Amino acid sequence: MPEVQVCFYKKNNCIIGFSAVGHAGRRKPKMRLWQLFHKKDKEYAAQSEYGNIVCAGISALLLNTTRSLIALTDTVIDVQSEETGLLRCSVIRGHNEKTALLMESLILGIQEIAREYPKRIRIEIIDT
Image (cartoon, rainbow, N blue to C red):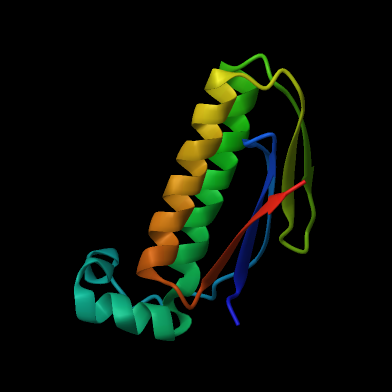
């Protein structure tokens, strides 16, 4: 079962929020970041404790999108974060083209990570 689950919520063909929960593992200190870019090492990373790179990538995308929605748009959002690893972001009002672009960019980024590490991530898009 994937350790990171990301859900996107869609209404009227627009992404109106997302939630993510989980953690993809820990990275051993002997592993060098550049090694993760080699095919055989990516496979090893996906099957071992090196999933921290996956979690870090997903976290960076989620947090950057949340902060970008606040700083770069007039969109009003509700953000919830828990120590369990849950992050939830919902658009309250002001969904516009910038909001849509940021949300679509987030989906693209998460899908790219999931393509590289399919055993670590589960993505759902839910119509509400």
